[in-house]
Image (tube, rainbow, N blue to C red; front, side, top):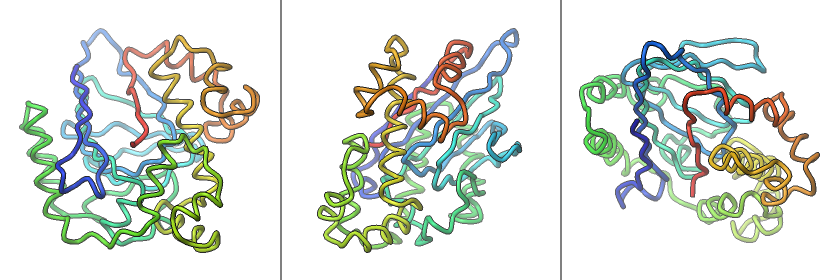
Length: 276
């Protein structure tokens, strides 16, 4: 298995947080897994060079055959990925607000919890890039291809604002920042802050902070399964475990115990991270 998180080229770091490469070939005797993917405070560009998984949206009661390259905007609910026997994913994780700066499209106009074919919203070349990645066995070479593609987009970036420095700090603090502090760091009023959040991440500041705290709890459990939920609740700033359970039901529609059982039953985990 290859699972690499790469810090991008210095010229990309204003809008790209990480580039991830994941490759895994499962033996034929192992059933293709179905993995729950949490809502994360990160917008992404994905490439699936060997073919995309099927995306299942439990809250919408539908499944979608994903294109080989997708852009994912605001997320507020869990999706389930029906993986393949041969898995190859290259992900570009944008800085908070970075996808808006690249596209110039307010994230409030993106469909919530769904993906878009990147050829339609970013560049028709992404399909050809997926083909090139399919023929690139080395992770370092795949990363170089994606960085070369992104470096051609730097000149298109919208200007940075103080909020673009405040958003990563909010994520690094696990969502534990009040609106007044956010507005102060962003050098705007609370009303202006609301507008800038909707423009850059597609969610209001309070909701985005709550989602970040929840995502922090999910990621902590996924990467340290020996921790119990009470410990995770306290480490992530919840008043008690019941408040964490409430967020699980709001964001995932299921209890923490059901997600924990999924972790135990799958042959591998995605080992998600928060940007930062």
